[in-house]
View 1 (cartoon, rainbow, N blue to C red):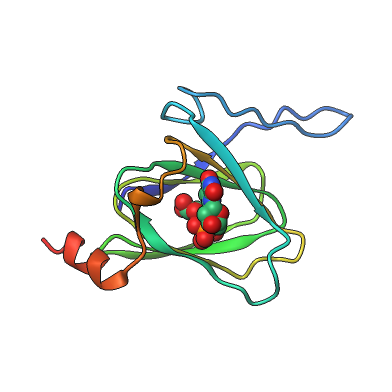
View 2 (view 1 turned 90 degrees about the vertical axis):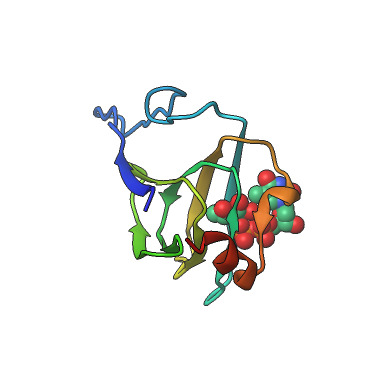
Length: 132
Ligand code: T46
């Protein structure tokens, strides 16, 4: 699966912590969009789609949440619980996000502007498209 955890360097000093994300360094694609998900209600699950072209790095800048990932072959569950790690999601991967802590702020850096046509929201269609 073309998804992996990436570690960031925190520039900590006596004042606290700072993480910088730069295109070409921590973010391996041209940055076209940033969005964040917060105030997620208890027991809510989100996602339930794949993307045709989009590449993303997701970072839990506060709190925690989990991702279920499936590329048509391999399944993986990942917990994000620190601003010092991100999840790089690449390729056609079905994603579901769950177990959001009440304080969770999930920031996502994306390679393309928002485009509903890039989404595959139908699971059967996703299975069909990933069949090899
Ligand atoms: C993803 C996971 C991790 C916009 O108008 N612009 C945007 O950039 C985004 C991301 C969403 N929207 C609209 C579309 C929907 O009306 O915001 C609403 C909620 O989006 P959605 O239901 O797709 O949210 P999630 O949490 O299910 O999925 C999001 C991203 O859409 C998706 O690309 O990989 O987070």
